[in-house]
Length: 382
Image (cartoon, rainbow, N blue to C red; front, side):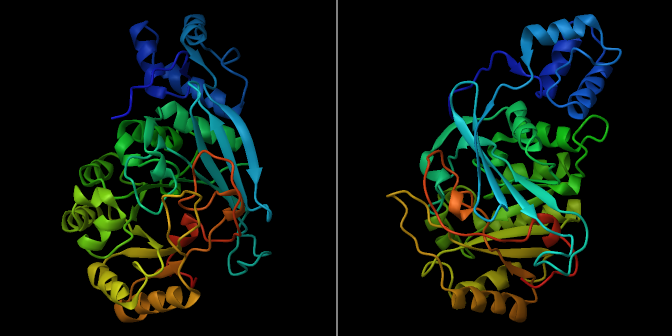
């Protein structure tokens, strides 16, 4: 376990803390919703002008809370303008990264079969670093430095919303969200609370996990309308624990059983993330094993070509285009499973999948489909 982080002052976006302080001081918690409606409608204004707000409530907030405990240290945009990486400095000096990915659904861009408005998806971090140790991931090479509070998670959305309006949230940044479950649950509830939240639909939020089995059951009970993405990366227990060390604790058979239970409870499609590593998990044998494992389930398999990361401890190679195409063909045609190939956004700013780590480095290219598009039925060809 990382050292417990203590913030002072607290983030006003920690809704549970605000409500607790109000209760302890005899202030009606109905004022909490009024507070957040004001903060979201009038960004950056604080709470001095909240309508019908008790003086005692404002004084308590002044003494214990601040509008933002974090600062936006750097905002870096990819060469094609589709991806923006935010480097955020926390109150205690630690840093996290969040990524905004833009998608053109107006019918004017390359996704001409889609109609609607341009939209942006924000990829948020839930921890500083990660303890899961996935062998292909830069964040995993950091180890776990600390858990974010719910307020710090929400502050990433506040910072991003000042850059552009956000439509979707994916918990696919730094950290394993289900290892910081209480804070993630509180942040998601705030994001999707129509009474006082940011106005996001529950289906606009996706939580990713490498497979923390006990917490998947909690997620089904607590946030049934939120989408789940499973970072699987291998079709067998032996291979999975070679590249995903946490698989030693969370065995594949128990993980799949829990996913089955999750889907029975929520009746929701699950996204399966599969990072393709050349010569490791990208062969026809693994494709057939994956198809047999997942056949008949309501899932979308998202193949992710491995992105170069800048660590001397990580030495994989990206798969050949032919390997990706053959793998997808087997999954689709032999097992009838929807299968897409993700074209990564933000490689040139180290903002692509697996690249988030606190260092200034170089990189490569971009494009992609976002979670809202992937969840549509029928599945569009990649």
